[in-house]
Amino acid sequence: MKDALIIGAGVVGGLIARELTRQGLSVTILEKMPDVAMGATRANSAIVHAGFDAKEGSLKARLNVRGSEMMEKTAEELGVRYRRCGSLVVAFSEEEEETLRTLLSRGERNGVKGLKILSRAELLAMEPNIGDGVTAALYAPSGAIVCPYELCIAAVGCAMDNGAELHRNFEVTAIEKTTDGYRLTSSSGESVTGRLVINCAGAYSDEVAKMAGAGTFTVHPRKGEYLLLDRECGDTVGRTIFRCPSKMGKGILVTPTVDGNLLLGPTAEDIGDKEDTATNAAGLVAVRRLATEQVRGIDFRKIITSFSGLRSVGSTGDFIIDMPIPDFVNVAAIESPGLTSAPAIAEYVTELLEKAGWHFTPKEDFNPRRTPSHAFRDATIEEKNRMIATRPDYAHIVCRCETVSEGEIVDAIRRNPGAVDIDGVKRRTRATMGRCQGGFCTPYIAEILSRELGIPYEEVTKSGGASRLNVGRTK
Image (cartoon, rainbow, N blue to C red; front, side):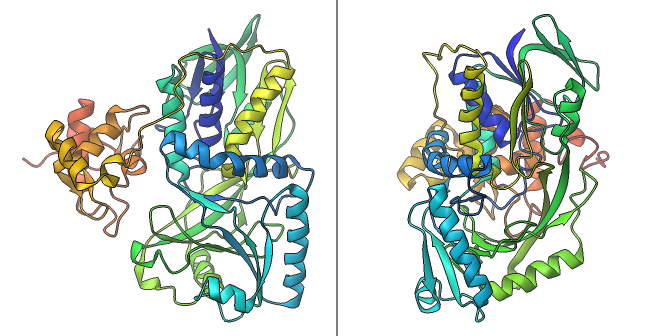
């Protein structure tokens, strides 16, 4: 029997697993998908929010500000790219300028440091491509960007490096209370037991809570659609440019990414299907139109892909982090600013458990650090030559757009939590994420997966399940 069973291997579940492993607990992470980071973590804005938007006194506000403070160190320990670029909320009218003053006041009460309202002239000096209709902006120097799935993979990997287990394709369908904990059963009939259950099931967290009799809240998905532009456009803006927020969220943003691309989006559409991540023409047209109002000179000819993600919107209007029954913790409705808050959520859950009577014996040899997945790419020529002398596969470039070597792909497959499909390699190395979107490198990545996993080439999938790339061999 494990000490803790964590349902959901997103960024929140991953960081909680890392923290509980640090505290000396035996941990098993249960993920219904073939890989980690495949829910809300896979597709979001990748913003580390400063904390001026969340309502003062809310759990969102508290954990947003604390998470923002923790994120730089967390990313550094895990070898994850982090960039404190700052953020701007732009106004287009006197009414919206009043909203900026409200956000400034709220942010100061939340404890956000360095907030300032800029005139148009000050704003143009900072961002020359700002839209013609923008009249003022709220500047938050503590705003930052990070890669959410890279953070999740590193967090889960760190937990596994320190003894945690990961069960993939484990969809929890039944939760049974036992004399000393809980038994969780999957759709395939497999079962695991643990003294403690932590529900980080994202859009399905309400259904998981219902199985255990641990909550009456509901969660519904809110779809957001994005456009991603080539790295040639990455310097169009230097900071994250928001619109004034509404009840549906923070609106369309224009932001650089830590990998040098330009990201536009998201839309906000409440839907009923928790699996619907399709994009549509109307949504993507709206992204283009609104982004153009905020920023001039966006080169839409350089769009390389579009995608959408789902946010888990709860019925309470705030994060739901509680222990409604003994040794069962809900971590639910973690919508924006959930990514920012994730390190603080892990800390908060640990504090919640201590208040409930859990006693920890911190792991003496816990290692909080991970070698960056981009170590080879970022190395100097001399360092690369030394690495190639030991591992010749680093000299074979497989993905030309992103300059990803065979050695990096092999590392992604072998290192916790190992990639098992094309998209898993993509999230760990950026192979197939460039201008050609995998048009050249996908067959070579499939060959490496086949060899490393010991499976036939035609059984390699894009993203698990029935997503096979090949139906058979012609010769």
